[in-house]
Image (cartoon, rainbow, N blue to C red; front, top):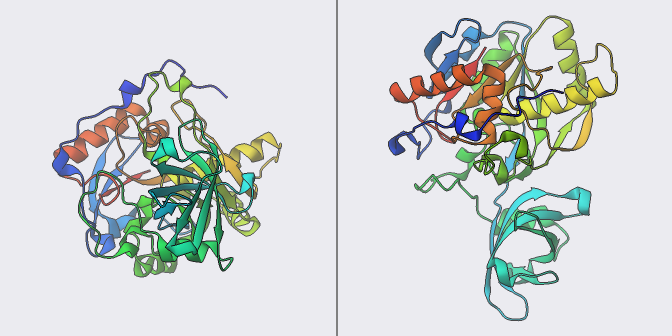
Amino acid sequence: MRYNVSMNIADFDYHLPPERIAQTPVEPRDSSRLLVVHRDTGVFDHRIFRDIGDYLRPGDLLVANQSRVLPARLHGMKAGTGGQAELLLLAVRNDLGPDCWEALVRPGRRLREGQQIIFGEGALTAEVLSRTPSGGRIVRLSARDGEVARAIERLGSVPLPPYIHEPLADNERYQTVYARRPGSAAAPTAGLHFTPELLEQLKERGIDTVFVTLHIGLDTFRPIAEDNLEHHTMHSEEIEVDAETAARINATRAAGGRIVAVGTTAVRTLEAVAELAAEQGAGDTLVVPYRGRTSLFLRPGSPFRAVDIMLTNFHLPRSTLIVLVSAFAGRELTLRAYEEAVACGYRFYSFGDAMLII
């Protein structure tokens, strides 16, 4: 696989006035704006999100991430001392053992291996197992009643991105309408624009939806610290594509339909399982079923095997997400689209408007 190893992260910077950062979601969900980017001509269309069906056709398949945002911020006390402690769950780490998580902790220096943190008067307990290279912790959670997921839902709060300063009246507004698999520290934001009614309208037009899972960690949104993209170490995330979904994706492409990835997380999942199919010599099979972790870093020069159309929000400068979008649409066209969005008053980031790249 060949990449443009000389690319500097400064090539993925842009100016965004602070007032363009969306602080609250629009209502209804599908009334947000939609910038349509035509890769073949470089032309931009300015539409409303509910018009997305005008750019799709019968036989196309939407692939969306069904991961649900956890109430991942937990406030508790250190066992033994009673000192305050905070845990921010980043990603489930079932590869390290049952109920293991990667997390950020406060106070970081004082929470060493073996330390226990008590939440809800003992309803939930976290044991610090080890440090991570980025300064986080691996923790093992246990619940008094044995139901860890239920204890997290009851005791935790939803962590909004740090650039959102307005309180959220309804936590469900930071979930997609099809979120069903708890495990993410942040929402797959491109999917926030869909309503059940819009999905049903698309289905009536012959445009179905299938679901994959990628549990999102906060590292996804952090700016890249390295100057050269080749030196960036991509975090890994848990993904799942079941056999039925893989079969639907393969059948769609075989029949001439297009694969429409709803968000960068769906793109990353699809391209990870497409890469596995290629490595396995699966012939005409586009994707294979898979459950595990991926550290795939999509940047200019990366092949795109599975995704034909990408739906995405507008992302932070110098992030892996704008690099991914640039890999799909081309860096110059992507940055020109961002300039267009800024000039035309689009709203940016998690609660902002959307971009359809066809």
